[in-house]
Length: 265
Ligand SMILES: C[S@@+](CC[C@H](N)C(=O)[O-])C[C@H]1O[C@@H](n2cnc3c(N)ncnc32)[C@H](O)[C@@H]1O
Image (tube, rainbow, N blue to C red):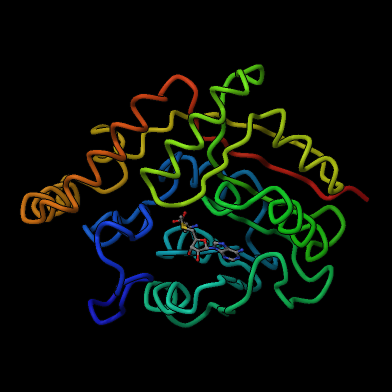
């Protein structure tokens, strides 16, 4: 990203900005729960070379880069936030078509993609928008196409409803986004009712702010830069530490999940 491209929500104060954009402000590049390694797993799980690829919510462009490196026939990124689209444009440059539209109504033609990928963008939607986005992925995909999903999930499937509500409330309070992660069984139901067959499911620890994952995702230099920024900014530090405490408190019930889904027919 060029330093002149403002991040989404740049005019919001540290207290109210969404957690992922706060992390981006302090220099974090990887904003998805399973980290770079789950994105790499996902991109390798479906044929991309020579295929038509659509990404929902490409954000800082990290997965867009992974996809473009595999020489797809085309790449189209779709984000509802015009500033997020500018950030992606600055990260990936030419060779990527970028559209400002919601993932539930992309405006893309039916059956125009072989691969649709979306990371860290479904969890933050309410029940009906989740279903609309999954239905849109299904509409945009050609028969047999793959929908690759990387999100947060709750474990085990039998998790008590009260615990689910408490986790959702704590996440909303600390990351200032209405995060509503589902259990693996609930995610499966959502995808199956839209006409997808689940080909693969991959669970990885939700360790977004864990030291080992931070080094794997950001490199030692990246971690040093983030730490420096947090040392200088007490408000950002307080919020990031509160987010980390929330993730730690619910560590046993939170996981990252990757799904490889195939459009039936
Ligand atoms: C947490 S960021 C994730 C960005 C990127 N996928 C990543 O993993 O780094 C969430 C992104 O989803 C976008 N978004 C949220 N709801 C959306 C929707 N309904 N349609 C399209 N984009 C959406 C936001 O604008 C934001 O850029």
